[in-house]
Amino acid sequence: MATPYRTARLPNRGKADKARACFSGMSVNRIPSIPIGPLTLAMPVILAPMTGVTDRPFRTLVKRYGAGLTVTEMIASEAMIRDTRQSQQKAAWDPSEEPVSMQLAGCDPERMAEAAKLNEGLGAAIIDINMGCPVKKVVNGHAGSALMREPELARRIIEATVKAVKVPVTLKMRMGWDHASLNAPELARVAEDLGIQLITVHGRTRCQLYTGTADWGFVRTVKNAVKVPVIVNGDICSIADAEAALDQSGADGVMIGRGAYGKPWLIAQVMAALSGRAVPSDPSLAEQQALVREHYALMIDLYGPVIGVNLARKHLGWYTKGLHDSGVFRNAVNQIADPALALDMVDRFYEAQQAAAIAGTAIAA
Ligand SMILES: Cc1cc2nc3c(=O)[nH]c(=O)nc-3n(C[C@H](O)[C@H](O)[C@H](O)COP(=O)(O)O)c2cc1C
Image (cartoon, rainbow, N blue to C red; front, side, top):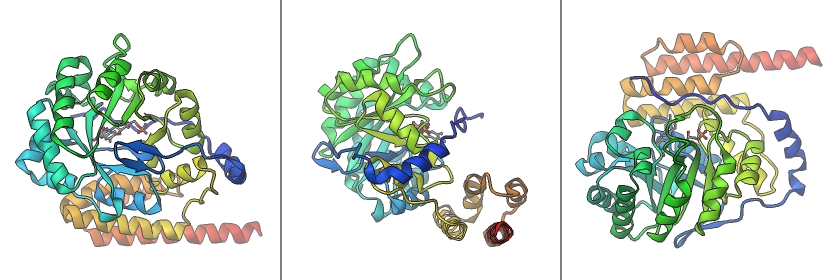
């Protein structure tokens, strides 16, 4: 089945970011801490939940560089209750990630409440309800973004989930089902009245899937509708994007998804810039090589060699994108089923990049 998730076509704002990095010592803190119920989120720059991407290995690496908060991949409430192998993998986190937000999707208020309780029992600090997923399978089951056009069911799900747990419950949604029904502000107000403690808005409708560009300005209508913190999401892939999204939306923080593909350090850079600290530079090629190796090993550890090798391929593609001969490397490594051989190939690829970089510097000198 074709997935509606696409790699974003994103503006290249590298120069602006570099310039900003030079002056970052002079900038002000643009992201004061925010409350999520009884918790305080010191730096509201959040890694977006992305099924098949932001699993425990990736989140652990992102958190090590620095991230305000990480959220688990969406877990179907039914799978959580049935305690499937997949839900166990998705519900697992590394202690370094804590506090962790666990995301649930479902269409039955009682089952969502039950799944939320299970997550709370596992130690989740926050329960996030998914009302943004546009995938047909989810929407046809009246979950994810389908709930944006079923406000009464959405209300019952929120109410049941909030009542079921002591930890704060948050909500992630889109602008509406389509441009004729942009009901995010109304849903946000209802959610706030029912006890939702933070709302994230992806600035697209369900019908847009991942096409067009995210409408950060629209998020301001949600921000103006509620008192709880609002997070702006969609197409934020650089420091400049994060600043523009905050300016246009008036939101209290940002959530970054696809921009972090192959760059688990991006969130930390955005966090530093927004809080007026010096922006750490990208890791060196040698550091990236070590990082890729570690990410690969963590994935094999979690999923086993067969599924792990398969799932890791997309990350290898993202890490090496833009490096010399990365297409040749990707084609070759995608044929490899043995993790040790794939890691050898990773080593040879990065060593060649480093040798070329040294040779380039020597020629320039
Ligand atoms: C591969 C992929 C998987 C996703 N999985 C989830 C998910 O499990 N839960 C969720 O709330 N959103 C999910 N999303 C949506 C993202 O969290 C985010 O809202 C969206 O990608 C827009 O942000 P971005 O432009 O920064 O990526 C997913 C997006 C992608 C691309």
